[in-house]
Length: 484
Ligand code: NAP
Image (cartoon, rainbow, N blue to C red):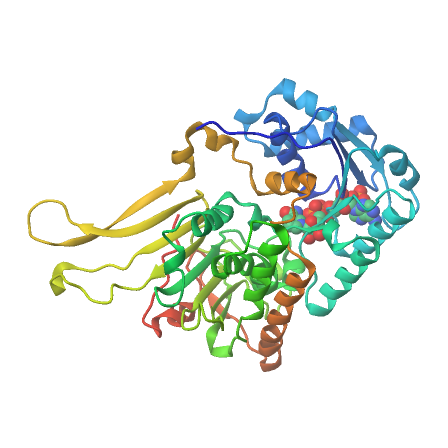
């Protein structure tokens, strides 16, 4: 298979917060990989901006070190790194003051695509947007990229949307959810809408239930104080799991076009039922040996914030009524694993002996660790012994299916940044979508806060609290195992 890399238009990308963790760990290593693939024009420029007193050379050195640290060694090419770093510039700037803005105005070209990445805390979005506007750096063609968290409730999300809307049109705003940039997530759309095989079965008549799991092994160590104000519901469910649910549940859009896709996702969010308390299990990891517990990491002995949540979600529309979506995410779990699993119903009647064994089809869409899909189908067990049935996987791990080309599959950030330059908003969240997601989330959080619910303790390295298993057991179902 030959991969086709189509170079993007010439661009100036300004990264506010260009010296921060996200820029050094994800954005710039990602851009380096796109440079190596030939997708970045040689004339394009990346301009880091932050308060630090750096010049171009010092910034290039900083990013050179970030590439050495965060790009796998076998993908580091001395000559390419040198050429890439030449495209980097730096402007010392204060989002809240006047320092640096005239310099940035002089530097940013008007005859290339202009993108401004707000890789800073959301408290600075308004300052950046206003100054880009006042200094006439951004125009109607410019694009702004904003990072999560996009608000912590409906009110704050509305305020952020309003601040951005003062300076930019919605068509210029790219709200990143890096889950949407994953190869598998786009493949979910390809599988659903480019094959005739699945769509007729993609409804409550044929699908028993759906499980969406995003399990992490990491703790909140080092960012406990920040995380404690958020928790798994705000940090993961409102955005990442919600997006996965939407892409799984949405109606076919009329075309693969940003607004057509986002309209359909919005309809799903609006059709979500409120979630009653007994359909939610929240958890907090305990201590293990020398590794501290959530309470110790959060530095708040009274904390009731959840590091784990499992919930049963119902969608009230014709397609899904009666098919629950079970969502689960947490820190310090058994393995790092993200997947969407579609459990089809059993055949309406079995023509085989009762003891032949019967298995319902299961489609697994793996996001990590190894992106791919796996469809379990039932076949006859080979050999003698009569008609005995066994389920076998039809496995498509992308790395195997694509061979050496899989190396060049861009990671989520790379793909999304190139989409910004191309002006394609399909994989970015629209303002009304984010607000609808908070509108659904807020009463759920208010519910447990009003009741004063405490999260259940769970053992680090486990699958979460026992009660999360019960959430499915009581419906006669079970979670797929969290495994390496
Ligand atoms: P960080 O490491 O704290 O970096 C913040 C950056 O902003 C630094 O470059 C800082 O440089 C700059 N900055 C701070 N105040 C400024 C000001 N007044 N004017 C201009 N620049 C200013 O944060 P981060 O982890 O990179 O995260 C950035 C954003 O992305 C946050 O909103 C975060 O929630 C989000 N995010 C991060 C990650 C991640 O993995 N890190 C993942 C998802 C989302 P100076 O102090 O020198 O100005």
